[in-house]
Length: 478
Image (cartoon, rainbow, N blue to C red; front, side, top):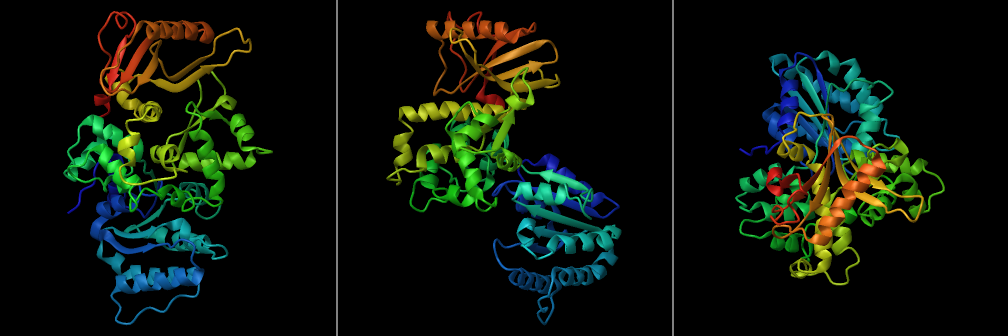
């Protein structure tokens, strides 16, 4: 039997639905390929008595025909069930199918996958599901209905925040995120892929923690070989994934892709006003919706800089695969096997690796805090930049501040390197000036600790001594 790697909190939530004495309506959402369906099937197993998956961009009649076929298979009917004429009729058939099965005790699960795709225009799907749940299903203590979708923003707007009959009806809500590095290591080990931390780090920076991508890595491959085969080979599954990814999740996906491209071009991120200017928008109404949808689906993250207000929020691209694709695959004249082996030796690779490593660190703040010995201390994490009005003043960019409730601040320097990172005299002086300017510009009275987050640590030398107060290496993420 297959096992579920990680996902402990999510599996526990699903198991609480099993032990519940009431009807449960569970919403599971997360970006494409993140493992939602696998988690649900593995957790509920043979408790799933009916499963149906919506199809993308097909007619109402085709959806209903497929629904009837799925119900025929689940019921073991000798004769196929005739396709219903409407979703209202479809849910009546589902009720008839479930009623005798709910008499035997124990939880029975109905799993509706790709739920947003079922709600085609003028299909009245949501109204029919609303009536099915409120008029009957909610009175069945042995029933769990799981609705699942990759279009996370749709799930939030139309289900979780529904203003009609489904308002406040969701009993459990699970947002499934990509694997962490620790989970990625366990997942790879389960497939007999034995890679050291640095190799896993390289994989993660290109593919992210997406199980569907990671399961294609083969035992005996290096990270460079795996990325080369998956992204640059003519039959690689990720060579064209970017062009399929966004249209499958969002309506008018060209807007989302435009935002992603803009953010990919600015490593430090962009404020909302900067995005409006760069994209040539006349107003920000459309952008607000696009940003919310991308954030809810996990492609971008927003950060409120230290001591700043909401209008200063910075948006950054945090989807590793999208950043990798736009840097190395998009618009490349020749994409063929062996390309990545060459690119991974180029100066552009080192620059990209630094940015990708920073993004990785921002996703593993809990691990950084644990390594610093402050897992239980309340903190706020953010980038920080100072843009002086006076051109005579020096600007300042800090990619990560950990503002602590114990009257301390960690100013984090995140550095990717292929070996120990060495601080020379020039860089040491730049770091001292950074801390000094931060104290001056921010006006903080807290203790400021310069913290190095690196792959293999910082080499001991005269420039490190007395400058670096804390060190965190990549091993803390595993």
